[in-house]
Length: 255
Ligand code: FPP
Image 1 (cartoon, protein in one colour):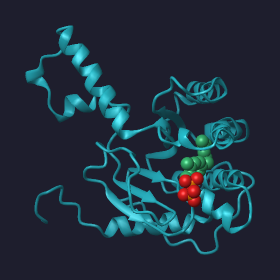
Image 2 (image 1 turned 135 degrees about the vertical axis):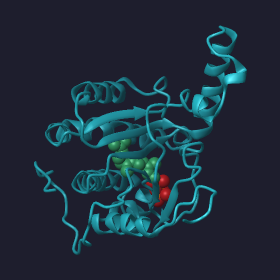
Image 3 (image 1 turned 60 degrees about the vertical axis):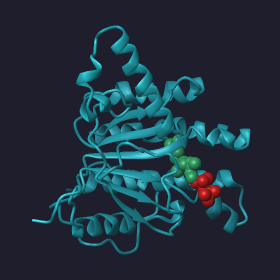
């Protein structure tokens, strides 16, 4: 598929592997790590790394649209990221507005639907307004579902789900005997989402950092040392191609 409306202002990758649609992961989750180190390596402020990271984000969304990935979930700000200096936190939380001010028309034209997962309570109004506007404007789109994990923490999500489920049990809307994995999943932020098929983490670290702890139980992991600002479309397609070679057994045996 040709990308209908070109996204502006991003570098083209050098070599792009052949891509066939067969067995493409439907839901890809990404931990976009390495912005700070990329900036430090270049003698720049960490915020410059996040700005460059935003360009990579646009490039990878475009690549996901092109290879007909159904859902992309990006770890943009964790419940632990509040520990960072106030100026960096503010800079990151302004990025959704910066992104959407420029690219929302492209995203709409390419049939992308935007959603957010996480605890919206502590987020500043400028972040919430930008996200809500984009969610409303793209609500009827049927192409790539693009989820931003914002003020998201896997443990926080599980605790919230337990509390909400307990409230329903107390209100006799739910019986404890009925509770199973499927019902519990409905109390998570990801209630309406399929679990990720593939998790990509850039930046060399090999950990989950509190991302989608419940949902990643049987997800395939792909790690790269490439720092997020340097992550290319070619890298993304390489991850997809390697995913296709994996044998997913879900605890069972190979056919
Ligand atoms: C992790 O790198 C990155 C983040 C915590 C922020 C991710 C943000 C973007 C990729 C920009 C797009 C964001 C939005 C909200 C649209 P790090 O800072 O931990 O890097 P380091 O490990 O090298 O320090």
